[in-house]
Length: 342
Image 1 (cartoon, helix red, strand yellow):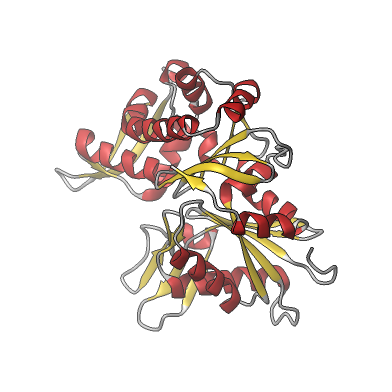
Image 2: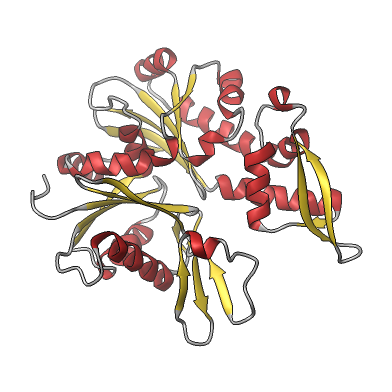
């Protein structure tokens, strides 16, 4: 168990957003994982949501970047600075107490990537850094009873990765992590608009389009339409067109089918007794991607299993890290136990 003094913190270090949980205070920060930097001096201009607003709108001397890519650190130095900024924001500037930090990571990361996350947290001001696999944290945050000898299954769809896992006795029995998430949906929408409408749109427009008319089950959203603004690739001038939810579905169809395929792979590798439990209890969806319209219906139709969306799916991993703060023995067992992955 962690010591009782101080405010130990849990971090959901995601590709799209970062959530910070402080012991005894709850979730105190939910910001975009974006940093704006002045190119020549390296000075931080903005971090978080303020920096996200600058995506695609910066002058030549400022660059807005996402230091996390597909669930892992793509730019170590910028990630460290971002973590330091957020830890400082949560703990107070010039904080004297160095907190213990637990960070959620995708289940498929390498040892090198694990060390990079730990080192970044320590360099950012943590006294000690622990790691917890995101599907385990998501299951804890969703309120699943995973300490019993019963099977539970979670599909955690984040910005950069989707983690699928079957859990029992407090550990991951079998899992799979794929580099598909909300950001891939956005990229697919950008490609679709360019290919079929000769319209160039940015990341923020694609994300808004996904939220407004994105769907994995177009039958329930046939009449939904949105005005999408971008730059015409032929004339070079701004243009607005109407796009339907069916078109949005066609754009992201390949990505959601990849998530379905990975879910089936994990089910195929699940021991029969645990598979029987999952037939009764169903699969729980967590992460921001779980909010994609109709995804639960799509998965239920193709797996023939009950599918439910966790309460507050975006916060599940962060809430799960908070529960892990109270159960450090659970972390130690999951790190030492040899896990099977597909």
